[in-house]
Amino acid sequence: MKSRLPINFTFLILPFLPLSLTLICILSTSNESTPLVESTTGTHANAGQKHEVQTVPAAEIDPNNPPWGAIEGLLTWLGSVVLLLVVPFFLLLPYVLYRNAQPAVPGQSLLEDKTALFLAVISTLPVHLLTFGLVWAVVTRFRKRPFWSALGWSWSRRVGFWTSAGLAILLLAAGLLFTNLAGGEPTEIDRLIQSSTASRFALAILAATTAPFVEELVYRGVLYPALQRTIGMFWAVVGVSILFTLPHIPQYINNVAVISVVFVLSLSLTLVRAFTGKLLPCFIMHLVFNGIQSALIIAGPYIQQGVPEVEQKAPGIAMLARSVRHLF
Image 1 (cartoon, helix red, strand yellow):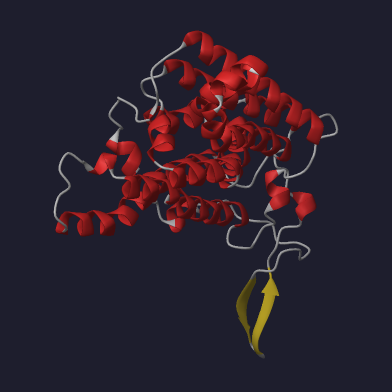
Image 2 (image 1 turned 180 degrees about the horizontal axis):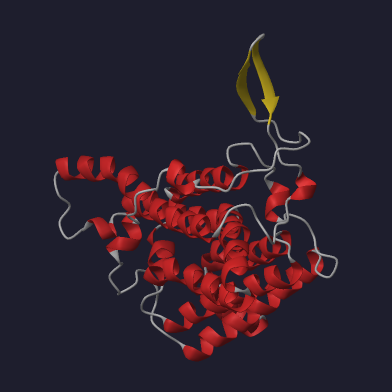
């Protein structure tokens, strides 16, 4: 079944050129102390060349007072969006050139080409890998600082795995209820899901694995603590939630209810980061939130094949299968 709405070409091609790591890494000077993460620099003495290791111990890095600043945090966010927009364009370009050299298929545009749509989906993987490299460069200053401890990648005493998972399920249930009550047009994610089985599986897998990991590193790992130190907790929470929502708008431009749910999700994740000082609970919440949807996206067509029977025996599952695809 195909959506009647035309898909936004900007979303499919996803165009923005990455900023250079050199520009991103305008970092403050690190402390020279007890070696923890190796970074060797050469110094010349009268007797010859000596090497000394300049490092920052993990114990000296406070994830709520990071060594990078607000400008570095904002540039990291901008770099992630640039990657999200430009990399798929260049990955799709060879296929577009090949397609244009072939006899045209009557009535089929590039936006209806299943291969093009599939390539647009899987191009997200190199985007996520490059974004991870960008975050790593900013956080570690190319191995001069520890990575995980600088981001606060650990549990809070108050919020562990089950609390994080429970909060995610509550958020997902509230989001599904709201979008069902509010209604709205099919989104461009719907179009991708309906385009082919390969695109549906690829989208679900990426949404449940690399997407929550990379997004949490950028938004709650690098951006939030830098902004919080500069403009305070309240405005940092609001600012990060807005910046998180902006790249999702092209996907859901014709459904305000879904955009609202995306904003509330980011607001909730950032509040957890603010009050726990830890990033791992945010990642688990995001992982569970996306993971449940991914499972239902994969299972959705099979459930819909038996919709009359499912409606009678398990109306709640049928409702989830119809509505969950909106909330990536």
